[in-house]
Image (cartoon, rainbow, N blue to C red; front, side, top):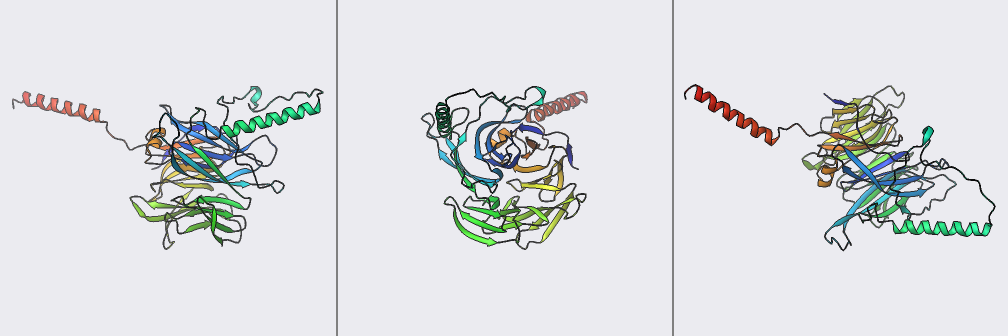
Length: 418
């Protein structure tokens, strides 16, 4: 029977609607989104959070923020490699070199060539709401006083140059002043709608509004293939673990993900989620497919309209989100419901990302749970859902029980004169 949870842990509260998420190297998570081209005052950017466990729950500290300009981030993919630290204190330490491929929703009036060298640090002071429910980002306007126009223009230019210099200097730093990671940002044009990276980080695939999917070589970003896959835009795509085949989704199917069979990495399954074409009262369907013959092996109905899908790296667990803000966690092999979090978010779930299951850093930040998945939504929250480890009797309890049993045995033997 499913374990119905009423609450999940709030990890962080981004100050923008989130549409894309990716977990990197065990303890970092990247969240992207924004307010779009409308001048609402909400920036289009991605934030990098460092995860940690405070003894009670998993939390996140925002360490880097990258403003991408007038285009909202609708999808992103990440891959990383370790590089040796240049710190004179610890030459043996390694920090990840993180690559990001961003899909940006651009308005026709904006140019697609956006700056990529303005990764900036956020102020460590957390913005707090002010009186009457107004947001902390709101600033009071001041009346302009008559000033020399030339002086004002020179001050503005000097201030802008100073800001850009600070941004460039802070590109590889965190709030702690240490180099934890390095970035290389690649922005995908306004034709693409989805982006995925192959399991071995050698290929990148994009799907576009024109129905084409394109494959690029990494890290050179050389286009190696272009195929007209659908008549209309591509909703989703994914690589098989061997990197030899991609799968695109359109129409009734909404998301698709390949996953290795648990304890058998050479075997692969395909999981899909689909929604009813007409009417929102019909349940969503999660299906498991043979990845060779593409024959459906099993399906599971879940209430609501499904909006996101993610599989854990060991192929054991599946998570899906709904338009009502619920998160469901299932066992991938049997599609048996494991957890239901009905009110995980106040609006639809836009993205899910599992933390690595065997990474030591990941185990620490998730509190040594069996597995943990992160979820995002337009309600400006980043949350985490844990699958607790199976109940085990502690070693000390076994020792105490053994002593008690031995004591009772000897007492009984003495009483019986044995």
